[in-house]
Length: 114
Image (tube, rainbow, N blue to C red):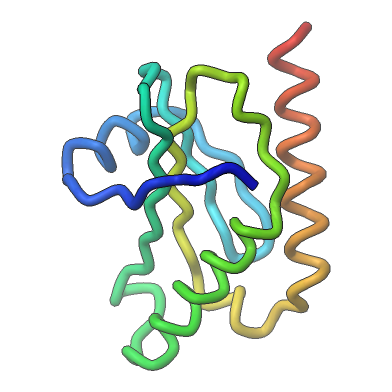
């Protein structure tokens, strides 16, 4: 996996949220349509969806580890990604979630190349 910097500014998150998203087990993935020089990755888990702070932190750790396991194509200029976690991620199997995200990203790449 190539290096991703952490997304810190609200404006960076908002540019990703304005675009379409894809969904997997307990995860929504947003990508920006603006090219960026440095790829940025953001993780978001709302208090509304996951009530306890311990669970929110666990979901964030799971999202970061899922992201590190993914082999993402860095040749695309649209590198900013936001992962939004939900409570279903706590009950889901890690390997199943990883395979479903990989499948969705692969389908999205095929659709984009057509």
